[in-house]
Length: 172
Image 1 (cartoon, helix red, strand yellow):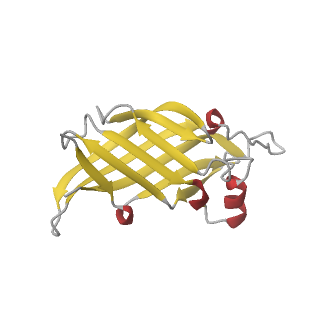
Image 2 (cartoon, one colour):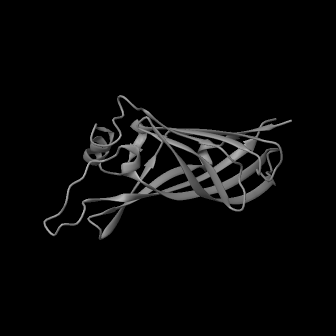
């Protein structure tokens, strides 16, 4: 029988990093997100993982940039308000495969999955922690806005790094 694991949002974060003008990195986060796991065992090798994030919760510490990212140039948040990930495998050999959907476009991805383990906390909860990371090409998901510098470099890199540090509690 599968056990349900619920996201602990107060001990979780979802971030992204992208090169700006090829010389520096801009970081951002999705502040509103949810995830759930159903697993047959505590090694999560046969787990089913579902994740969703609210595009309108994007925060790069720059309101103008955040609004541009939410616009039709990038995420088209009014039409596609969610980013979704549904696993097609459990966590196996430090990897997890699944379908990532951004802007209505779903593509298979394989992400690195660093499983931190399972512990019993002092409050009677069983907790599991993960760091999920990977890279995607934003243009594969219709995030195709592009502009070049005078020197011919891209203002925004096509490659985006994804990082999710997430903690779950076993349903009681």
